[in-house]
Structures are given as C-alpha cells and as structure tokens.
Amino acid sequence: MAKAFNRHFQFLGSSGSAKPSGRLWLPAADVYQTQDGWVVKVELAGVAAEDVEIEVQGNVLYIAGCRKDRSCAGDVSYHQMEITYSRFEKTLKFPGAIDGVQLDHMFDNGLLIIRLKKGA
Image (tube, rainbow, N blue to C red; front, side, top):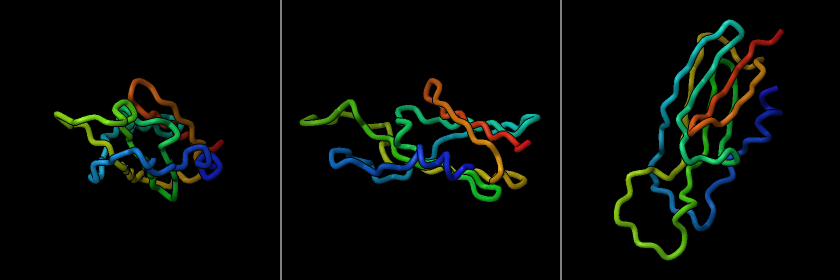
C-alpha cells in the first residue's frame, strides 16, 4: 500500500539552476500515537509536495527531499543566507511494524502532516 502511494512523492533531484548549500538539512518532527495509528508532523516550510519522498519499511518511516530557493533565481547577489536550501532526510523509528498502515498526508502552513492508520 505504501509503495503505491510513494509513486506520487518521488524526489526529483535538483534542477540545474538550484544552488543547494551542500549541508544535509534535518527537519524537526513531532510523532503522536492515536487510537487508530499515528500522526507525524514534519517542519518543511518552503518545500514543494513534488520534492518529497515518503517510504515505510518495517517499523521505519523515511522522509526525504529537497528545499529549493525558487524566489531568487537569475543574476542576484546574496547579502545574507540563513535558510538551508538542500537535501533533507528524516528517519523515524516506531515501536512496532508500520508497513501495513494506510498512509495519508497533507501540507498545512509549512508542516507535512502524515497519518498512518492501522489496517482493519
């Protein structure tokens, strides 16, 4: 089930115009256990849905992708750079297997919210 879902979220790689910082970015995440599974919130401000990959294997949820600077392209001179534009990864381990869950997601105000519902 998760593998079919992941076809919609494959990392596309950097475009020729993107200039990643080279640092691996590790976004913050919150994990909540609910009666019917889990809710995961990942801080991904500025990341497009098409630049995200989600995989489930055993008891591990793997989230990866790239944040790209789409607003400043062309001939610009940088004065200050504090936001990391690069590849990111987040690996979350759960206390039991989650590979049979129903996976649903949405972006909301800079957060990727993933719902992992236990099978019936």
